[in-house]
Image (tube, rainbow, N blue to C red; front, side):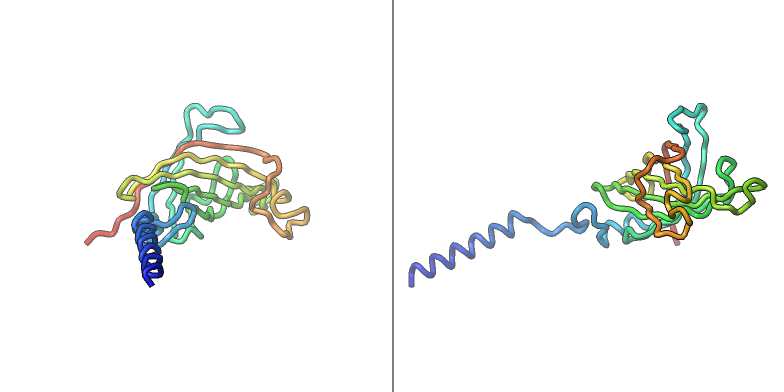
Length: 195
């Protein structure tokens, strides 16, 4: 009987020690998973601005500025970057739809997709001419009210992403040679609602 009590006491002590060493569960959860606490801190609407500093491997001097409004979801499944519908280099473009993933204490990795349309007349206005995929890294300040990071873009023909007949199945993770590249830096400030 004494051996059984000693065994049970030892098991209880090991269990208590393992709980103590594990510590309390993190409110932010494991990296890569956008848990409720972290996602709520990141989510919101922000004014974002940045610079284009590289085009097809060549430096852009002076850097070309840009700006947009960004809406980030709490669960990592969505974000929309909205800006002017017309771009002098690409023509018309749709909103940039985004997914993100937590990669650090206050860092996220972002992937954008955007359709680019011809301004006309050749090819005709509204013709899908390319699909761009951006990859961005953002680090937030401790209050999660500002962020900054770097971005890079690969641009592909519609056929590369959607198939020869443009009827899919599409592959947003296509790994072929892009027809163009860009990169730069960006910053953002959250829109706050205060009484």
